[in-house]
Length: 259
Image (cartoon, rainbow, N blue to C red; front, side, top):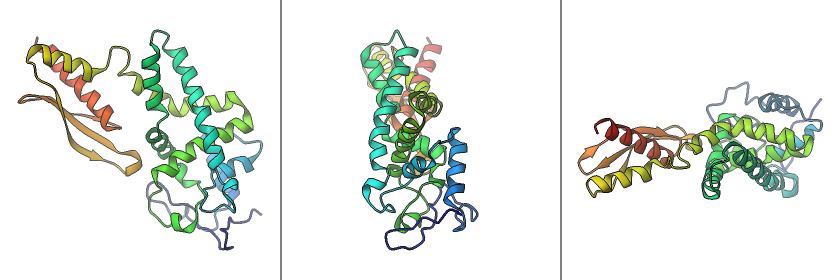
C-alpha cells in the first residue's frame, strides 16, 4: 500500500485544496498518493513509465525534505521546454508573421498568468502536495499553479521525450495561441482604433474597466472603449489587455458599420 506523504516533522499532510471548492472525497486523508497520481495522469492524457517523476513534479517545496526533492528544478526545465514548443508551433503556424509579432504572441502564451490560468482550468490544484500551512487555504496561489504547469511539462519530457511533451503543451495551450494571435499581424485592434479616432476627431480612445469576475487565478475582465463622449459596447477577456483588444474590435466594428 502506498504510504501517505509526510512533512519534515513526520506529520501526515492533508491533500492540497482545490482551486475551486474541494469536496470531502477529494480532500480525504485516505486518498492515496497512487490514486492521486493516477487521476492526474488521466487529466494529462499521458501515462508515466516512472510515476515518481510525476510525484516530484507535484511536490511543492513546502512539503519536500529538501528543495532539490521538490518541483523547483523541474519548473526551471519546463519553462524552457514550453517556450521552445510554443516557438516551433508559432513558426510553423504563422509563416507570414514577422519576428516581432511571433515574440509578442509567445510572450503572452508562456506568461505566468497564462500558465496559472491553464493549470487552474485543468484543476492541477487537486493533485499538488503542499505543506499544511498552504493546504489549509481555500485557493492555491497562482504562482504555485504556474509552477505546477511548468514542472509537469518537464516531467513528461524527461519521462516520454520531446514529442510527448510537445503534444501536451499544444493541447493545453492551443486555445491561448489562437487567442493571442487574434491581435497579431495587422489585427492590433487598439492600434487601429487609435489611428482611426485620431484621423476622424483627433481624440484618443480610453478604456474603462467595468467589471471583473472569477477567482484570482482565472479572472475575466469587462472593458468598454470610449472616444470623447461616445461609449462603445463592452467586451470580456481573460486579461485586461485581451479585454481591451476585444473592446477595441467592437468599437471598430461599430464605427465601420456607420460609415
